[in-house]
Image (cartoon, rainbow over all chains, first blue to last red; front, side, top):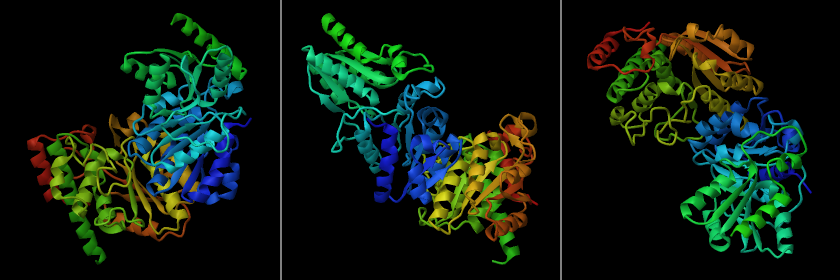
Length: 309
Length: 279
């Protein structure tokens, strides 16, 4: 068990050795975002603009024009929404090498309540031209994807989460941005998931296999560009798809997959996620459960869809 | 060049910049003349005296940067870049045309010499701060100049940027405030008073230099002062200007913020600019 925000804190300490032009830009929540060791060891590569996210995005863009690789680090709700126009104007439109890497995605700041929970970030970021959108599933895959995001040129939004979650991959994991990764093979029904809710999806798929249902599980760590081929392959092989995300069912992975399904003209889809409503303070799993998202819900949904087939 | 010779030279350049910008806006039948003209002397002094830039090598690493935070007045920037030799003069007739390298607001990917894309107010100054942080840490001799509007300074982000500049002691950053007192909907004093803006910059940790923004000698003096400063504070030049300066029917008339003249008014304006003497 390890939190995705720890991946960020650990990986930037390694990456800066390979990329001395790496900058981390904090907006006062460096402690929560795990950037403190970086700040202490590489003060020349660190900027803290205070509680001023809009400025953080602009400062990052200015640094990027010099060939720096700036990473803005804040909470997902602010990194996506508070500074979205700055990201659009000064990072995406000029296609500058600005990375936005945020902790506290989805419902994971559970006790903080709706103001700090981020259920729209993947969706709004997905609509920006030139933007790549990534939500890793566990500690090791997050470190791999952070590395890949820094190695690629262009704006990237990456979502981490707050709490320790189970390992899914090991240290040797090698993922490619834009290429979905099949975690469990199967051809009865496909579960496509993004982010750290993967551990729920994996548990559900394992339960389905134990009951004789060959469910497929695919890690869509990259929400944009979406691996459309992997969606079409799921339709061709499994016909039915369940998307699972700790995000609104509007505009997130479910919507992205729905776009492919609709254009493909076949297949059937159920989007599991936050059902167009805000969260509240409470236990993480309860908040998801209230939206029909849990291991049991995935298992039941798969069975229901297979019975209807 | 001797000082007096330089002053006359820059006055001539400001005149050329106004005529070029107006020709662009007239040809396009769209664009922002008012704020272009309030900045003409400032832009002449920057591009033809102060900035260390090379049109033959627009990406030179140690060049000074210029950020047009009030991006809508790009006709005066494009005119500066054209007259400086970054582009062919035929580009004068391509402003805002489909497929043009001269977009309605500055685009660093399309226009040589544009250091950052701007247009959404309040954001350019943040990018200038980012550039100044990076250049300072790299021990570059390059400086960053940014032109900000007084209407623009109603954006809260401007002050986020300024306090960051002060925190990181960006004395390699020169913020020039084009205080022309007019914004899109009318006079700033009516729309949203910006209060004592020089005092605000001081309170946010900057050194300020208050000048007549149409006086070439005063602009040169201020640029000398910020270049030679021993202060570690960001340098702010508060340039008191007149929107639409140089064209009688545009001066201090808010509707010329973003409007193109018809043929008759264009001819009149070109004549007034040619024959007029500023300051």
